[in-house]
Length: 319
Length: 280
Image 1 (tube, rainbow over the protein chains, first blue to last red):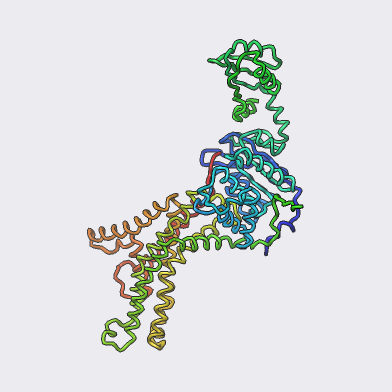
Image 2 (tube, rainbow over the protein chains, first blue to last red):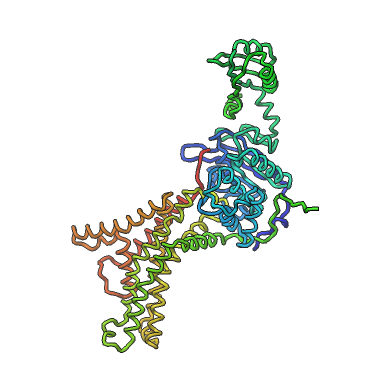
């Protein structure tokens, strides 16, 4: 029996992914712990720091790993042991998975052929996939000569070339230049608008925010929060936010900042001051004004440990 | 006015092959890739040199030349031919060392396993190339020699007198091909380096043969042949071709050894062909 062409498939209004008590252990190590979650159609961001369990979750939902416990359903069907369902999934792994001696076109064509397309149709589909990621010009170059960004794009191309219903993208923006990053984000959003479902992982909050407002927060193998990114941002913003400021006159800067609303505490370090604030957006705006006017001296460096997602998760876990 | 080109994604509207044929995609890809290597093509070419020599022998044996009676074609001719091909079986098998090792090195396994194919299909796809190439240097030339014997002799008399030869050549070639293919595949799944896999395979072949010779010399017993897959193939070949048994090892023991090696290879493959398990 032939697998129906995509145009003949009925669009599913049900959830894209459902997991029930999903756990994965690697011997004594827990990779994912009792995850019950429903991922709706559209774009969903999977946000978590390195080592959170994102890749394990993605391998489970793409049917590559057998759950130690629980079940994963994609488009309503169990994924494990159901390779026919893989036709409807496109997976872009985080790691490079290339035969570097192959050309981009040859590699994508070979993988598309595994999805059941005849050689000519596979070549045409591969070209469409490469075109979608702006890589058609380099299609005949060997992958070994590709830059990091091009490698990311060719991985994207193989994931979407066979026209899947569900795209699972593991850190797809990693290594891309700003222009290609914007192009890829636009492509992912375009997919979402066209009724496709996309699960995209990242450890960078603003990357996910630029694609979708629907996110899953994962850490230590557990889903910590799910829902609208703004709600989660509010959740995050209810916790103090640390800002590290390296300045030439830290005392003057501290005096100026002390009168600001939302500043909870202040700590001096060598040539720097670390401020804890409950209103980070307002604080950053004020700090930018200060730097521009020079009213509190020269500000050399502003960093926020809270931009590191690990710090955000520590807040959430403590809560 | 110049046309506006839609740069967005266009959906595939064609048909897809039914699930279950992906193994052939993998097999075909590897068969073609191997043939693109000049060194491998050279080995295949040289592997047919003994066929040419035997073909000349069979031709001369079918003439009235005085030398003909000394080189008459017998069932042993075919058994010896297959024994001679052992070196080329080794070489073409070594040529397939990267079948799984390369996928592991490049992380391609996780992409394969995210496509619509099962692990069994993946292994089947990887098994076909070594099987095909081993049979190409054993079964195919041996059957052609049998055909040449009939053509040069101008009669079916030899075949009628030795009807067992056709199944014997086929059966022995398949046993040898299965043993080699499963062994190289299992070893290939254990490493990310095709070079290391080649060394392991050569080590298994030569080390077991050397161990057998050493133990035989020390104990003066040929029953140690059970540790050498090559010796076991000889025992099986002698039984299949109805030749005189040289080894005291019974044929059923030899078959059991081959079966155990294949079963062990399957167990290794079952354990190794899995998605990369990363706690991340």
